[in-house]
Length: 275
Length: 321
Image (cartoon, each protein chain N blue to C red):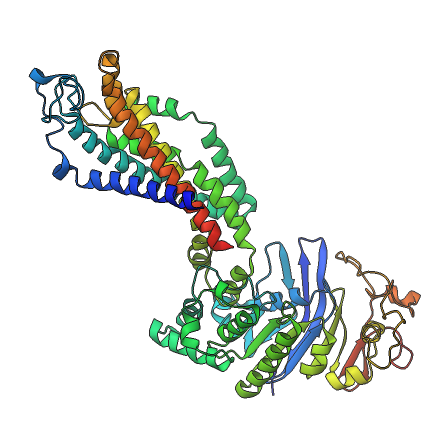
């Protein structure tokens, strides 16, 4: 029990830390993340042989400060995580609540949409979109946002089904509440805790997917400091300079773990509150 | 004086398969308590929901007359119905444990009804809520307003539900088994509270119950339902003094009376179970369980009068049942 709270707190601290780093990136970064210095390429981190305090985490193959790129990368990751969840959450929750509440035909349509979505391979769609429209940050967010709503829809649908026949919904109707009021004020707040957990899962997934897409060259375009892109660009040098992929890799791992710990903890906390 | 609620020949079908209510007629007069009695599944709750326009999808409602005060409910739009509900017509439910939304405080839920129907501000609505909580016998209303439903006991929650139903000074309160989920001492408190409120506010009460003890204590008028039909309707005194329909008699015979029932004597019961009534069913729904059943019971049975204001639905004359 104690350990679990500790894990939740740790997750919270990690997520908050990365978020703050992203927001205050211009103040925290010691160098311009885009500034190249071809005379100082592949400088190792400070604690390794040949490292210096001028570049705490060393430099990449174009001599850009790795720490600064990592800090600006937090911005991209959090931006993608949050905006994707907002987009996909809006779509998924709307569909799920409508399907779960009305059932029947409406539910059939929603279920069909979910099935269709599940049958679409995400990477393939992303590939097509990039091939047709070129890669950009907006496009990555839109692609992920428009594709990751299925879990929101499924969870919103089932939880709405559990809630819709409860007495307080009938009581609200008996007190003259409108349909919009019932959906937004009676149903939604009572399924929100489940959706919050889904949101954390989806956020971690979106961040990982962005890294994957960027690694494959289908995500964020090159000069932007995305963690996935840093790994992709570093992979050619990893044999002699393993830290170029270790640094962003570990950061990515820690952030995704932090989000998952937070989500897990939230779920337990909210469940305890219900009992 | 015109009744607050008048229902004539109310029928409810569920997706053409089950005839849940088959021609129920009743009148609730101003300031009186009208009890709708019957066993589980006899259609009493469905009748109440039909009056409120709260039937589930797939249910078809039909009535010759469905009038609340001067409003014809059969012609009212859903929007118009929503305006009435919670304002002039309020309802409380059986399960106080689940009838309050766990996501909001008591105060917020109560205030909302008042804001919706009266267009009042939050401050005024909360004052009104505190006043009503005091009225239903809740001490420290100010503190309760800030609490969440899970912090309250069942009895307290039912009081909150009652207070919430009274927020807009309703003319008619429909109470669907309001005390069934509560333990006996709390039941008595809630019933006393309802009586007091009714006297003070001149409320008309349509009380749905399966408990004849509650009927004896609360009712002015009683309507007994069986298998979706009204089988007997009378004043409470007349019904208990001279039950006429065989079903009503059977029900009353089931109540053990301390002193007159011997220890090892089996408790009274009516053999058989309630039949499932599909549309097109004709005749008396009770005939398979009735000891007096005749071939004529398979035809449509009309209501007949046992005494002025006392109607029953049986082929037999009152003195033979």
